[in-house]
Amino acid sequence: MSVKTPLKKDAPLLEVKNLETAFSIDGEYHNAVDNVSFTVKPRQVVGIVGESGCGKSVMSLSIMKLLPKGIGKIRSGEILFNGVHLENMSDREINKVRGKDVAMIFQEPMTSLNPVFSIGFQLQEVLFNHMKISKKEARLKSIALLKSVGISRPEKIVDEYPHQLSGGMRQRVMIAIAIACQPKLLIADEPTTALDVTVQAQILDLLKEIQQVNDMSVILITHDLGVVAEMCDEVIVMYAGKIVERTDVDSLFHKPKHPYTKLLMGAIPKMDENVEVLSSIKGIVPSLKNMPKTGCKFAARCPQAMTECTTISPKLAENEDGHEVSCLLYETSQPKAGVNA
Ligand code: SF4
Image (tube, rainbow, N blue to C red; front, side, top):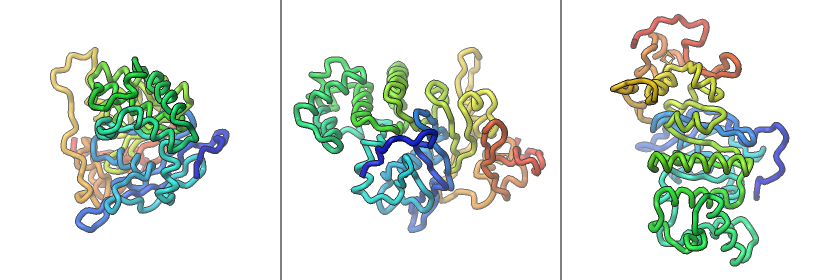
């Protein structure tokens, strides 16, 4: 089964509705993604940001149905790709979608590429899985794909092994594998984090170019707001498994609303300011076992927390111009007296 049917005009490409994904710890399931809903339109680049442990990667693994078996599971909610439900697909069905309609690249290509197979073998594996193609055609297509991601001497590289390539080249190979079947949605999980700064910029430029040339939608998972500014149309900020803010990229950078987003912004180094120490966010994201049972999950770290923040859970609500935020400061009936400031 493939979901590569013609895109419906103006319909979202991906719809995630009330998704709850849980992990088992000591025999008890805890939500790592907690009632999350969002959409990705055709050709849109959506950034998902937040610190480690906020649920960003679990979200992408849920969409791809790559959760570790017996440990992680989708508890409830729906994931629709081009109108087709993915969440209940069998392994056989989802294997036909993965790599063809939806593809993913990860942070560390060395862990995704198989060290014992040549680059060409790994590219051709994806092509053979999803296309009726001869060996000769697959080899030629692999070389063309390597060339399209900016790898020079692709005729030679196709026969090399991952350990013979630099980190930047390995990530280019991963991108070539991901776009081999021209997916409509690419999920990129921290695609540049493991790379040098100059190589990061090259890979981001490449992703941007490929997204535009192939008319792809992209979900870009990152903790780096600089990457978001560079690449994204819309941004989702996650904290402790929940969406706390969602808006377009301009609005996020010029009018951030949620206290967590404002603190993330404050932690970005600025070229025009002579700051000796960057601000950081005090404390850490609560672990799944120690998640607050009531109230706002950010309350213990929030400089604007109010007494009621520990008892009342804020709801994600549209604020203005489609800017959504989940914070009691923006729920008009709540008083505005800070306690953690
Ligand atoms: Fe801070 Fe309260 Fe808003 Fe949570 S609801 S972000 S604790 S002000």
